[in-house]
Image (cartoon, rainbow, N blue to C red; front, side, top):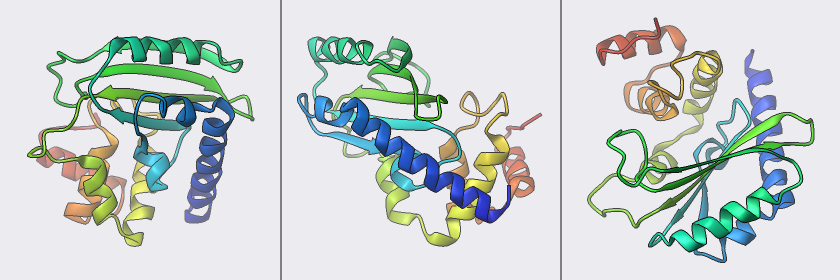
Length: 194
C-alpha cells in the first residue's frame, strides 16, 4: 500500500471504529462502571486493521464484569465473545485483569476485534504505555508505523510474539523507517520474523 492508501484506510477504519462504539453504546454502558478509555490504534489514529482497544481502570468487581459480558452478548451484530481471567498471568505482554474479546460485524460485514480490559489501578512507578505513546508520537512517526503494521498485519508472529508497541518503540525511540529496518531491529533484540 502506498502512503495515500495507508492514510485513507486508517481514516476509514477509525471512522467505522467510532461508529461501532456508538452503535453498540459500548462506552456509555461501560461508563456505568467507571471511566472507560479508548486506547491503542483507534485512539492514536494508527489503524491498519479493524481493532478497538478499551480499558476500564478501577478496582475490579466481577459482578460488573459479568454485567458487561451479558450486555455484549445481547448485541445484534455479535459474531463471538471470549472471556479470560488474566489477573494472575505470568506473561509480561498481557495486562493483569479481566478480558472480554468481542468479534463484531461492522457496516461492511467485516469482523471487528474489540478488546475490553477491566484493569486494577496502575502502579504509579510502572510506565503507562498508552500515555507514553500519546506524549511522544509525532506526525513523522505515523507513516513508518502504518507501513510496518500493514506489512506485519497477517504475519503469524504479530500479536503473539511481536506487538504494536514493539513497532511504536522502534519507530519513536530508534528512528526505524521501514519493514527492513524493523527486521534488523528485531534481530538486535534476539527476535525474528522468520
